[in-house]
Image (cartoon, rainbow, N blue to C red):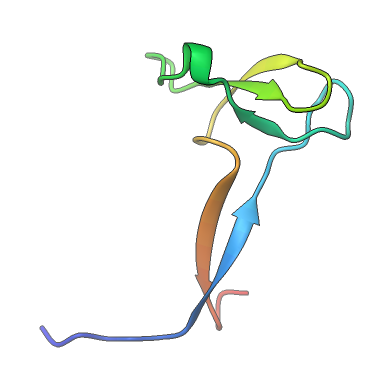
Length: 69
């Protein structure tokens, strides 16, 4: 199958802390790793709130095509 190319734009996907409403959550490296339930441990960069999040690791980069935005 031949190669197909298209222009894509990078987007940062972040999760805002549920506790303080200002800080961004990041993967808690001290207890990182996916649990059996599919939750990832995160910590708020502002208030230190810890929370297990579904849907992967935050922050992350997502690439969207011109037609996807």
